[in-house]
Amino acid sequence: MPEYKAPIRDIKFVMQELLDCESHYAHLGFEDASLEMIDAILSEASKFTEQVIAPINQSGDLQGCTWSKEQVTTPDGFKEAYKQYIDAGWSTLPQDPAYGGQGLPHSLHASICEMLSAANHSFAMYPGLSHGAIATIEAHGHDIQKKMFLPNLVNGTWTGTMCLTESHSGTDLGLLRTKADINSDGSYSLNGSKIFISAGEHDLSENIIHIVIARISGSPSGTKGISLFAVPKFNVNELGEKLDKNGVNCGSIEHKMGINANATGVINFDDAKGYLIGEVNRGLNCMFTFMNSARLGVATEGVAAADASFQGALSYAKDRLQMRSMTGVKNPEQPADPIIVHPDVRRMLLTQKSISEGGRALVASLAQLVDITHVNNVSQESKVAAEQRLALLTPIAKAFLTEAALECTSHGIQVLGGHGFIKEWGMEQLMRDTKICCLYEGTTGIQSLDLLGRKVLGSKGKLLNLYTDEISSYIKENQSSKGSSELCATLAEYVELWQDMTNNIAERSQHNPDEIGASSVDYLMYSGYVTLGFMWLKMVDVAHSRMLENQQDESFYQAKIKTAQFYFDRILPRAHGHAACLGRGAKSTMALDSDSFLF
Ligand SMILES: Cc1cc2nc3c(=O)[nH]c(=O)nc-3n(C[C@H](O)[C@H](O)[C@H](O)COP(=O)(O)OP(=O)(O)OC[C@H]3O[C@@H](n4cnc5c(N)ncnc54)[C@H](O)[C@@H]3O)c2cc1C
Image 1 (tube, rainbow, N blue to C red):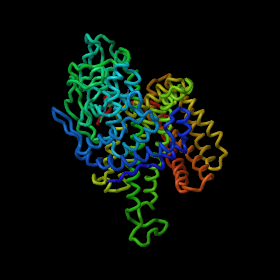
Image 2: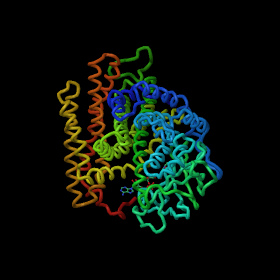
Image 3: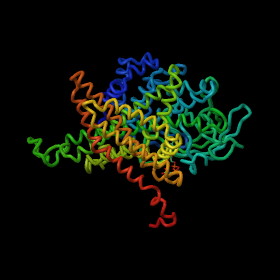
Image 4: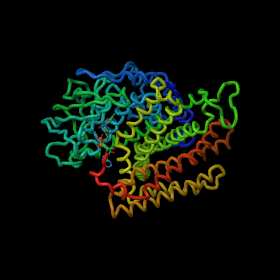
């Protein structure tokens, strides 16, 4: 089992040196978020995740959750660890002080989520879902609902879920059948069954607040007739006190490929009392608050998995002795050299390192945009700009980083050879746990359609142009800088091709709408490689200027520069393959009629 070490040096590089969080927080009015405070919180979070959460990761996977009619039991140690999590106040960190939160920035919380998820993906999902439920009620609930649900969700004694999926309604939420009928007191009675509900039932918290989509009787069919409800497992009065059991039951839990310590439940609603959140038939709009927060959360899970796998592979590659280096013996005292000397092992390790560090920078920069959308003391213009950028980059971060993370976890196994395939080493668990990231919160295919169809073509290229203009201006300003001029020139070519490709698809899709679906995943992967390239370019510039200012920690900055060079040499060119594939259009993809797919 790889021993998890929180990557504090790199997290601080990203937050403090790359993104200047000190000025960012001061500008947004987060007076408590001083550098000393941030350092202290990161240090405590690293101890907590390394010492409390990581040790129950592998045992949690092996034991899994158990279902009985009365309750779902999480693996040994989870209940105690969750109690420590809430006792230490971690659940309150980014939440509104009006409900008992500490009012600290979302972006600080995001880096703690990365550590939690890298230490134990299954565990991190329990508070992660509560976070989405809190955001949804805060943004769209009435004052009474906020009073009923938020204080206990914020302090963590209650947890939340997101109930969208039904057996026949996954991607296509408009097909849902769960019904809601209004009661005389203004509440609703919900009837129906949801499947695949993460943290749907468990023994960690005293109550579970399900955020449920359902159709009010008489509402239109399809997505225009969906409303949103808060449905507690135990009823709650207006003071936020827990009462009797509601009509909510867990019918079973799934036996899964991974995240075995997170209970994935069938949740049945039988005349369950629920409270309408937001307006009738506007449920999907409200649900997007949850889904956007959750999609960035899943992108974070991708970064976390890539990093955890890198850590395990790196320590093994330094220890494992096999064969000699082709360029001469490196370890004469031993019968063989450590496998880290071999180019192919280095290729895998550097792929993991460049994806996890580049991804960390991307997620942290998006989390800073989320900070901007949450505060009141910035101009409307800044908020709109932040929202537009999030709209464009969230599907890229979610789908690209999780697909890349899955590749990284596969490399993690490969570096260990046959040992990587053996459970004891913990590397295969990382791969099993990570696959779900490409599926839930909208599959890679759906994120890609969202990016190309809605965000890029739907805005007539505006959102993309704003972003590529920013990259081009950055390149213009930095192209003569000694350290990164070559990288600037390379990235400029990819940005130009990005625009050409987009114009080309826009043109083709006017004649054949299937051109969008046939291109979208290649388009998203292309966008992801270029977006990460931009992150690496900026990191190289920071590393160079740091080395000029101060010779301390030179090896850290040199590693940044060399990893960036690897990314530009060996990872970014993959984007050309995606461009070539999508350039061939939809014709061959659609040529075979469905009945001719023979086997
Ligand atoms: C472990 C686990 C935890 C989960 N947690 C939750 C949760 O907490 N809450 C919740 O509500 N749900 C949850 N889900 C459900 C998850 O979000 C869905 O499984 C996912 O959205 C896909 O839906 P589906 O499985 O019905 O697949 P389908 O919608 O049937 O899709 C099957 C395939 O078809 C593709 N596809 C479908 N439509 C299109 C299209 N128009 N264009 C291109 N491709 C398309 C999809 O990309 C996919 O590859 C969870 C699932 C699992 C396995």
